[in-house]
Every structure is written in C-alpha cells, then in structure tokens.
Image (cartoon, rainbow, N blue to C red; front, side, top):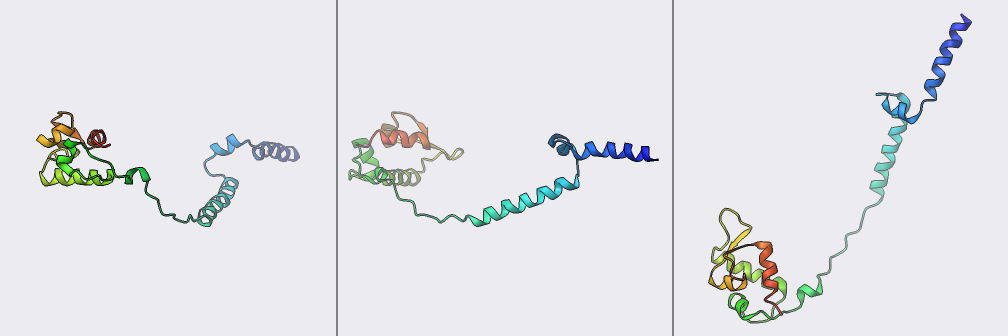
Length: 139
C-alpha cells in the first residue's frame, strides 16, 4: 500500500510543475482561470482610468490662403481669389446644378465644355482626380 501511494504522488508531482506550454494546452485548468480573471480586471481599470480630453482642431493655413484661379477655372467659379476649400465647394455647386455627376457611379464627373478645359480634355474624371486637376489651375 505504501508503495502505491508513493507512486501516485510521484505521478502527480510532475503535473504540478508543468511548463507554460502544457498549461496552455489544457482546456480548463482551475489555476489558469484564477490567474486570468485578475488580468482582465486590471485591463478594465486601466481603460477607465485614462479618459482623453478633446482638443479643438486648428485649420491648416495653406487651405485658407486665397488663390487666384486660371481663366478656365474662373469661368466656372468666378475670378476672385478664393481658398482651396471654397474653390472645391464652388465646383461641386456647378456640378450639381448642371447634373454632371454620373448617375450610375457617383464618384465620376462628366465634363461639359467649361470643365473639359479644366480636366485637360477628358470627358470623365473621378472626384479624386478632379481635385488634382483643379489644383493645377490655382496660383
């Protein structure tokens, strides 16, 4: 009997000294769950303890600088110097007023005679390409 108890103790001892790999492979070890629970609680406490104060964004001065449009662009938005943000707004007003946005793909703009001069003769451009082409007409 004494030999049987010693043998079982010997078998259980290596299981207690298991490495991290063997503990991770076991599906539900009581010790592993007890250790994991405090970690989750600590993470939640850290998230609640660090609220960030919102700061107001300052506009970039380069966007607000009035720029003179080329004669081709002036035919669409007017000849007065305007910031780039206003130029883009005026072009979109012109596009929507004349219904130049493609009906199937709203990202594409169909050019009329005035816009073809700005779009380097292209019949249709994407809205992202449009801003790039318009930037070439501002000084």
